[in-house]
Length: 474
Image 1 (tube, one colour):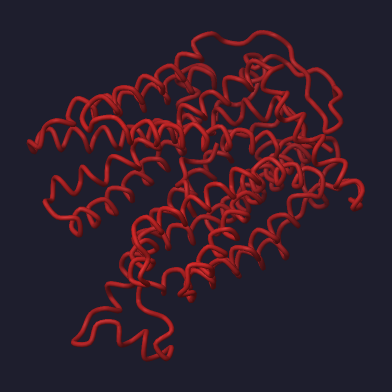
Image 2: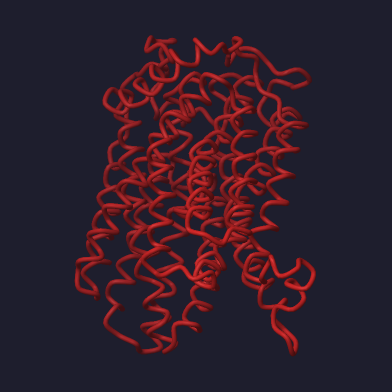
């Protein structure tokens, strides 16, 4: 797969073919993550407006998380066996259906169905676009092609889309609510079916339709053997098992997975603890929610900046592995700042806490593209989406466990310091550079030929770029 070029592409890194693949990947990331950003600011409030209790809303989000966790590996295997393009189209169709159910539905069963479809779409799209990009670059320039730049730009695009989405998703209901009769504009135009809080979700549906059209008309992928039903039924379980075994055989992949788990722990702590802190600072839940939305936007922008700086950090650090160490260490320092200021409401302590929050996202954003380039050098196209799904699953599972642990701990410095220690431990895994040779694993579990060591491969590649940290719910 890596030896055959796509029609109309050129070979060397930086060629028109590589630049075109980067542009398409950046556009894919933006179209994929703008709708989740649009719904992030209004979804909980919309559910509350429709009479759902806090416990019922928590159950809906749990349904989403459980669906993603259950389907993460099988859908990654499906992408490796069936192809990236059809899987992305199915993910887009499911997201359109989910957006319509969540935006227009008024009963618990309809909303539950929407969350299930959204979770299935999230699992299908997890890592698939990135796998398409890496496959395309390898088809143009071979397995030693430089990946960091494209991965970094994709991470920056994801963060920018989330930041723009959360701002637009918060502003649209507010603008529609202006005037003497709040909400009359959207309700009158839709016969009362669409309240202002539902408009961002329906705007997301429009973006999803554009996403499907873009995938169908623009995305091409390297040729792969025709997939029959029998091949899919036999190939998906084998690919999933190979993805799980790879972490036990390859020390670099194992460190990438453990680092993803540590990042999941850090993000879970931030998502659970920061909203309460903003409400304490502002003195009211409503104003705290507005401040948290602005802070989240700043976090995504910092994550995007970190992704953009990933190639530079690899050049300065001397290798991708040292850049991962520096990025995760920066995130751990941010959690430390959040911890030491947790018991104080002084304006200086608040400013330090904001700086710590930004450092967490900046560090994780800078580490992710460097981690993923190392991962892609250890796996072949036949198992690439599965490996990314294993990585995502590790982050989600440890994030969920961290959420349970943080929930029973007393509020204050301790939860922050514990999660900071976890992230620091993830950083320290990269102190030792890897020198052993490994093999690229195929879907059948066999070796497809030796790979150079992570150090030598990284040193050969130009010193340039995992997507930026993403929310747990789309």
